[in-house]
Amino acid sequence: AAAAAAAAKFHGRYAVHPLLPGAAQLLVDSCTGRITPSWAAKAQKLMGTWEQVGVCLPKYEQFLKKTNRKDLKRAHVFMNDEAQARLGEFYLCCALRLRPEAVDAAGQDAEKLLKLANEVANEDVEPFFQDCRDFVSGYDPNMHHALQETTIWREVEDGLFWHHSFEAATPKAYASYQAAALPPKDAWPDRGDSAAIERLLETCSREVAEGGRARALAEEVYRDFLDASAMPIKGAIRTALIDHGIMAGNIVFRAGQQQEPSSDA
Image (cartoon, rainbow, N blue to C red; front, top):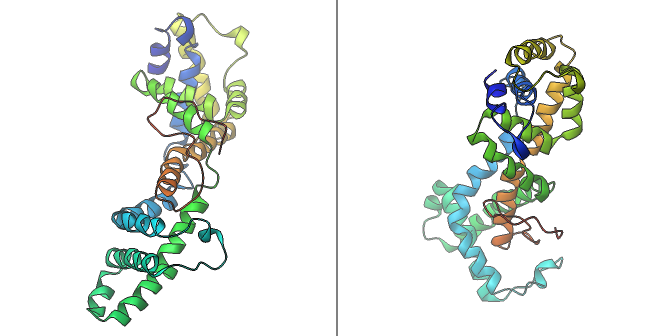
């Protein structure tokens, strides 16, 4: 009801029929707490590790400056002594962040520290970098941009935010949900008929309840949205990987900037 009332205040290019944000809010209410993003645990783990090793990344950049980028693409990389030293410093820095007890145990023993650096490289850092690359492999800058554009509606009213977000993230499934949860558009009441709108939203609430004909469609829309909502975190990780030379690629969209994503991936 609150979503419908807020929508009724808008006219012109920003106007949507009050039934739409009302139905969108009911969809969310029916799924919240039952359906969670499948990617959240993985993202949380990656970000936790990133916070630990992030302070060491300037050392990795120093390594890259001492290495021919073309060599890094070869199966066997032959590095000069200075590049090897910089890479070793990077891995030891990571060891200090990830395995502080092992660093303390090695003390000043150069051989033990070198062995520890190799272990951290092979068992911790490089697998972490690969996990990051795998996680961002499905990044869609256009979806990221589209979802960022919907955030302005959060400041207006939650139902309007959900309506525009679902339209951006999963338009086909959302249209199917609307068709199941609401009457045909030609049967919708006037925007100002709050009593009729309230009655239709009560019917919609029953349709999205357990056993209702729109329940499965509501869950599909919500899952699609949750999958799409990974794009901001994927974009942040991908940008960091590219900025620090860990992954090749172009940064086609940075969160917070107003430019449209370019066509180059």
